[in-house]
Length: 220
Image 1: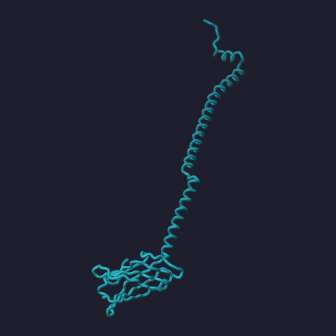
Image 2 (image 1 turned 120 degrees about the horizontal axis):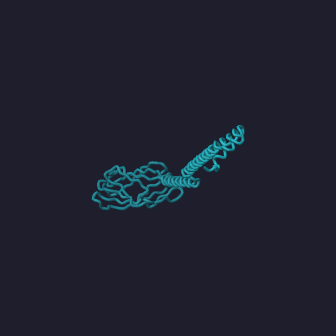
Image 3 (image 1 turned 90 degrees about the vertical axis):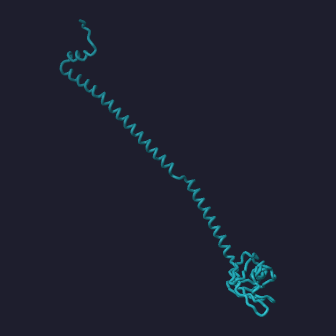
């Protein structure tokens, strides 16, 4: 049998040679070292786990910031939106102003109200309503008369001025050698001249509103 001392028997031999008290101290040191190693490893693992958790928390926070940044509108986008809105408001105001200006021009209404036979004369009554917002100092209309069969009877010029501002006026003229029963239609063929205190006004027939209370039609 060999007397060679194995490595793990050194501790036992040392304890036998140093007596009871040194043996206890060495045993305590070895035990402390053995216990300290797992604790150090455990602490290291726990630190790693906490560091990993902190990293995940930071990542989640960054993702939240990214989402918030993506959802939040940029200053440029808000500026563009406000500019578009201002442009639309400007366009709306312009359209409103144009419509108001057109309305301010007003209209001239003419109504064929009555045909009266006086001997061999047919007397025609017109009702004028001036909504042009100024007095008409000149108003000359070219009229064409049609009989009941649709044939042209005659052409004449009617001078209806003056017509006061915002005033309803009745004007009449005589058709000599004409029977009222032969008048089928009256055409306002043209506005020869129309003027107010400040000068000529647009001589467009389309600005006239025409109507008739009789079977005979007044048209343009």
